[in-house]
Image (tube, rainbow, N blue to C red; front, side, top):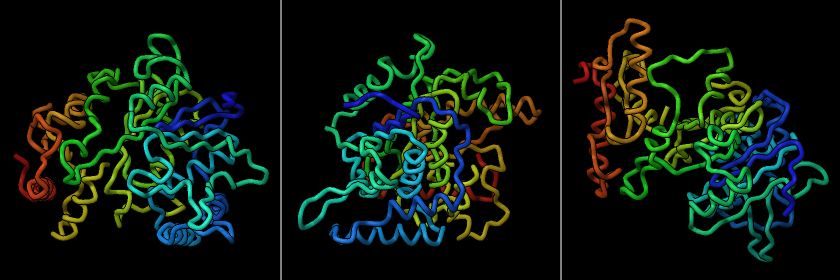
Length: 371
């Protein structure tokens, strides 16, 4: 395998690794997105994909043509293809990443008559080197895949590599996360553990600059939970199009992959605009016609995870620090909405999950004060 990187490299283990590029702008004009979008949604005339996959690609072509309703998979594909066009190497690996664990990516197609493989991202520009985009299914061994990809990129452990050895990596982990009633083994990517290893001081407001780059550069990594395809697009592109490298841990959604409201327009990919629970709260607010309920306007933290998990214990002291600086109260004034503390990440009973989720959503839009 040729490991030489020219302009840059983006590596996915379930994610990515980046090498420095000169460009510092991760926005892309809609007209450019339309051109590359048409290239990755068009299939060869004589190629015969599975009828379900053919329908998916037809829908994607319609999204690109209208510039509306861009879903999660297309947002990801647009991020990757624009990086390829800019001369960067993109590597995607992990269990079932070619199709996507939840049948959403379809980065490699198979002719139903000949068995021929076709990867649209290998056919974007004339005389494209197929090694520029690598997508490879791996065995069911997340730690093994991560170890290989991390070693491939910089040979040292991730979360403390920069502080110990002054070695940077832009490796990205896409970790399935979302409370959909599938039980404790299929709900949590253990967000709290990644946040616990973050090295920013919760009692100090960092020095801010217009780009926030300095604040990000002084942290050991970034942990994100994005909620729109456009935001996901920007998160991936900035990994390679800024002047330093940080590992990125993405709480990758499941429910949002096909959520009717989780869509973006191409215009949003030219500009940078909370979590999965937001969509359920917003729907409940519309049902209740609660126009006076402004999500996030109060000092309330709402999450799907149990209180001893998720982001609450990371956010609370940092939110308190900001509140004190604005004379807005103390940590006692922060109200919590979410599941009660629990030893397990989630219940194994679907009906109980639905009741828990409904209680969270209802409480988040109730007009009465939060207890």
